[in-house]
Length: 164
Image 1: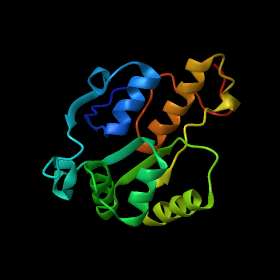
Image 2: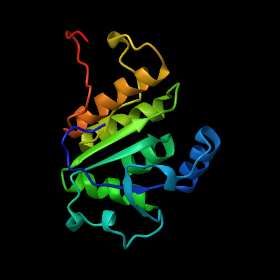
Image 3: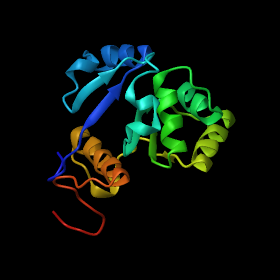
Image 4: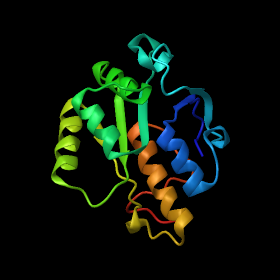
């Protein structure tokens, strides 16, 4: 639900991501409506592998602790890792939506490392202060927060201190 934004979304889905979508949502990447182009996770010749492709930002959602560790240590064993590395080196916005809990010391150290490199850690926590009435509204509060991180105007966006 973007407001007057001309946004092009490209996607990269790992094998694990494909399995998670299938197990948790009974769908595959091709059914995600906002994505206009998909890249193979192993194609290092794809546009996201190069800073000259000039993307504005990158979001890794969900970001597993394995992907976080790879990004934190600069290991680029797939296109997601490489694109994240390129995003950081080009001083572009990298948002990592980590989803695992509880966190151990290694996870926290890796989060600090990517933060120090310029990434934003943004776990998918709903904004309960907005008093969502159901799970869909709770998820929407996170979508608004993610949109804020990317500088996107979101239709219906509620903020603290405002009324419906």
